[in-house]
Length: 341
View 1 (tube, rainbow, N blue to C red):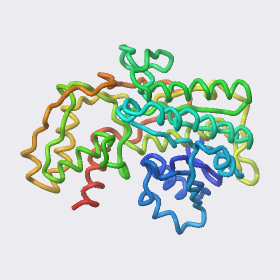
View 2 (cartoon, one colour):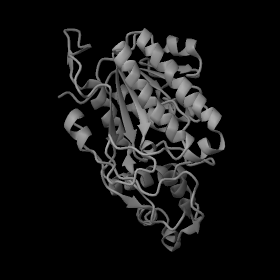
View 3 (tube, rainbow, N blue to C red):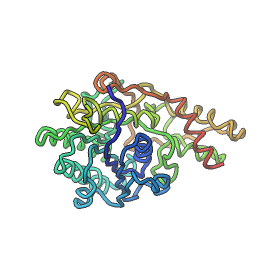
C-alpha cells in the first residue's frame, strides 16, 4: 500500500502551527503543491518562512471562521489535512466561547467548503481528550466517556459532524485522535504551551519545571514523525494513481467515516518524562543534571492517564510508530538546544 502523498494539491489548515508546518515540510519534499491556511492566532510565520520561496507553496492568511476564505482555499484541492484549531484544555476552560467558535463553527465551515468543492478525502485532527473520564486503559476508539473540558467537547463534536457529513454527502472523512504530540517547531512559550517544549526551554535556562500533581499522571507521548506518517496513510489508503499520477479512489471501505488513535502505544508518567528530558539535555549543559522538578496543584480538566490502543490504525491504515518516545525526546532536545544555545 502506498504510504506517501505525491503529485497532489493539498490544503493544510493551521499550516503555520506545530503539526501543520511539519506536514507542509514533508509534503513539499515529496513534490506536492501545498496551500497553507492560517490566521496566525497560534501559529507562527517563523514556522513557514523556509517555504515562502518555494513556488509549490502558497500561504493564505485567513480564518476558518470566514466561509469565503474556506471556499477560496479549496481551489483544485485533492486532500485536506485540517489542523486549524485552538488547542489546550486550560485555554478552553478559561474561554469556552472562542474555543467552540473556532473548533466547531470553523470545522463546519472548512468541511462544508470541502464538500462543495468535491474534495474526496478530508483528514482532520481529533484528540485523546475525547476519552474523558473513561477509565479503561488502553483507550479503544469505540469506548469514550464524559468529556472533561470544553476543548474535549469540541473535538468530540468534530467527529460526530464529520461522520454526519460522510453519511449525508459522501465526502470521505478520517479523524486522527492524537495523543500528546511533540517535536521540532512546537511553541515553548505562552500560558498554554505544551509540557515538553516548555520544560525543555526552562531547563536550558537552568530553571525548574513545575509538575502539576504528584507526577504520576501519565500520557502516551507521540513524536511528530508518527503523526505526519499517519496523515499520509489516512489520505492515500485505498487510493490508486491514474495515468497522470493523480489520485483516484476505490469504493468506500470501513476506514472511511472513521477515527483512529495515533500514538506510540506506550505510557510515560510526568516524573519519567522529566528525567528523560534532563538526560537528553545534559550533553548541552552539565548543570542541568542538578535540576529537580517543583510540584504544584493538579490542573483542572486534566485526565489522569492516557494510553492508546493503536491496533485499529495498524490494521486498517497500516500505521506503525516510526519513532519511539525516548528517541523522539532526544531529537527534540537536540533541535531546541541547537536553536537556543
